[in-house]
Length: 448
Ligand code: HSE
Image 1 (cartoon, helix red, strand yellow):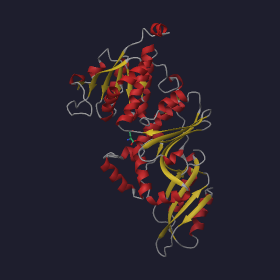
Image 2 (tube, protein in one colour):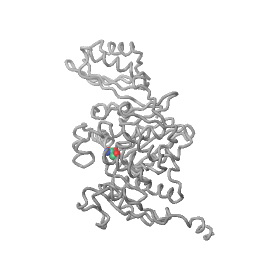
Image 3 (cartoon, protein in one colour):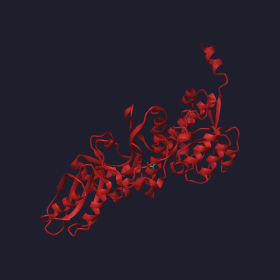
Image 4 (cartoon, protein in one colour):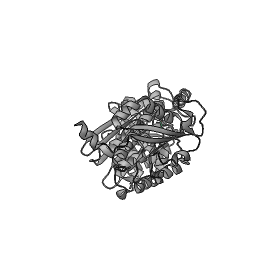
């Protein structure tokens, strides 16, 4: 038996040589994981992963891991020009020179692993086509959902399914801020400042808070789930900076929790895709994904519901995803089957541009919070405008009494069309009895 095994696998490579570009937090995690878990990786792979070179502009600041100084270089070309290196890990981030380095590595027949979601969301098409032409692998598990195996799940585990829907919490910072606002009844600004002090939010939090990072990740997810290229600017995107403790409290009373969701729903002839704060039932698993955790609820037509949960960022969770790609790619290299699983799940020749449902056409339930004077006839005027736009009210809450000032009035609607809601709100906001801008939050209930 042992002899048969030895004969069959005699040709298999015993060492896979790797180069790492970018020795920041995740790069450090990758080096640590290769050092700490080298034995279990070798047992699973049947080969050693040999990290030959690490390139970074800063090669003097001490890292959490000890590396031989001969491994370090400031010149990424040392890695790209080394014929022994068959896998290049790009963890420098940003568009350039990351894009050029990856394309050069691919042109030289090297396989690539990257965590760079912004780059893939913008230049993914160019990179994946180049990889297909050269028959090399590009691994990007770490680019969406950190350690969560969402890429592998869509590419492999659910490969037999039409993906009916994906609802994801895919930005840890935004989820952390919303969770703290909910648990501690604090305002967005106060929680954001605290999160920045604790290192849970960046000094410039725009990408995370305004849903840009979520859009990058949703665009990559859409390409895998549907084989569609999407332009980032076509995705409807709203962030969480407008959410107030008042909305969170009303949501709780109505039986919901507010989450920043990335949503993809398969329609007959198009895909509905959007990113915005969403009220979801308190009892749903996604409503209980708190702090900086990420999660996905995917529905396949055959598989039904699949739920994935885990750390969306962080040194070791992200390094785990990066090294798992390195192992997958090494397994392909060992059998001479690089490119075995198409990078975007579907074969490149069937991938085309996405037909997105225009945002105005989506149909869902809505939460509307108005600030109105407390006088007889106010509700009937508001209800009249909603009715004229074919919007049916499901519930109304009015709290407190003010002789002079405005009071909050909250309404939820039955299924309504976005276009109608927008028109009605514009009209309502012009009434002299309405103070300030009306708050609108979409509710996802039975489709979750
Ligand atoms: N900034 C991201 C987040 C992590 O807060 O989830 C990296 O994608």
